[in-house]
Each structure stands twice: as C-alpha cells, then as structure tokens.
Length: 282
Picture 1 (cartoon, rainbow, N blue to C red):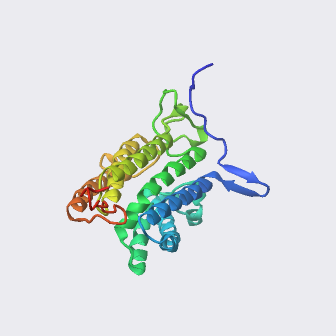
Picture 2 (picture 1 turned 60 degrees about the horizontal axis):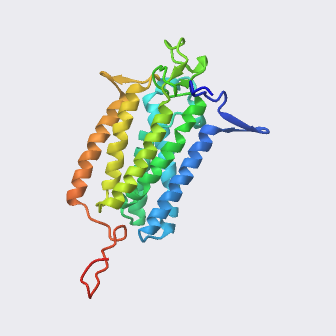
Picture 3 (picture 1 turned 180 degrees about the vertical axis):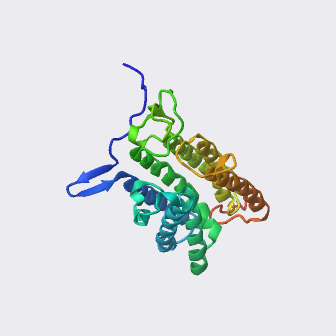
C-alpha cells in the first residue's frame, strides 16, 4: 500500500438531481447554519431561557450574516463584478466572507436583542461555538469549488488543483496547501477549546465571544498569509490579514475588559447549592 501522495479535488461542485443542479457549496452552508442553530438553541435553553426566543431571532441573524458576508466580499473585490453585477447573487460559487458574517450577524443580533429585550452578549456567547462548527463545515465548500488554497507544496497532504483554477504564475504547480482543511480542523479545535474553557472557568458575559474572536483571528492571520488567491494589499499584508490582526487585538482587549466589568450569568453558571448541615456547596 502506498502512502497518500496528495489530496484530489472534486472535478465538479454540483450534484445533478434530474433537471435541478445542487451546488455543494450551498448545501454545506445550509448544513452549517442548521448545526449552528441547533447548538445555539440547546445552549440557550440549558441556560434557562425559552427556546422560542432563539427561534424568533435566528432567521434574522442568518439573513444578516449572509447579506453581510456577500456585501463584504463584493466591497473588497468589486472589480470581479464590474460589467456583470448580477453575479453578486451567485453565492453558490463562493465569495462569502467570514468578516461579513460576523459584522452582519452582529448588527442583526444588536437589533433583534433590542427589540426582543434579550441580553446581547449572552446571546453571542451562546452562538460562538455553533459558529465555529458552521465554519468548519462550510470551509469544505472551498474544496468543491477549488478555491482559496495556499502556496504550492510537496507535502503528502498537498491539494491537487486543476489548471483552470490555478492563479496566474502557478500554472506549473500541481499541489497546494489545503487551507480549507487547515481552517476546518482549526475551527474544530477551537470549538473544543471554547467549550472546555467555559466549563473550567466561570466566564463573564461576553468573554466567550471575545475569546472566539481573538483565537480565530490568530489562526486566520496565519492562513491569510499562506493563501495565494488574488486579494487587495495594504502595505505588506492582505486586507483580510489586517482585519484579522485588528480584530484579534480587539478580542483580547474585550476579553480583559469583560473580565473586569462583566457579570456572571446565573442561568449559565448557577450558584452552588449550600448544604445547611455541612455548610458546603454542592
């Protein structure tokens, strides 16, 4: 038996069911949304809240995230759509930025929480682990679209890319760093880390959200500098690398601030029951 020499890429990112072509990228995004919504609702209910509260706001958060994701991509890569602006609607072909998801989703959270009188950052804390799960699933859509891969590599897990999908200047290279796989595995590792930290320490409201932003951006900064897809540069770095760096620092600052000024939610961390005889918490 020979060892794995490379990771093949799917030749087509669609599944044909009769006359209806299903785009795998879109299917994976939908699966990610369902998983994230399910995880969030379970956490929200476990913290003592009504599941219908989450069901009332999840649709608006998803819409805000998708719209924000697309608008961010179009704003930072507008030259790809000039002359054919209807392509903006073709989200199944890729082009949904995580920064737009976070920004658009956060705006939706702020609005609906104000309308529904919910604790904004307690809700984002409930969402954060599910968002990582959705990212881990959604990144596999890049594999089917043969996009957003890294520099050429001869490592045994190098990703095979068809000539039509290779950027200019890389026609002679055949295998590239599978950044989709790196990010998917990283998100799963962070999912485990966040859940462990949440159980190990009594976090204050907003700290888990801040920890998500800081740790995800740490890894994303490295991945951005590994990728070779066309992107705008500001100085020596890609725009998204700068965004990763700024958000990471903001997340660290937010984590520290919330630790000093935030509150511990009693539904999330119920106070220990005191035994009247032994005088001990249990």
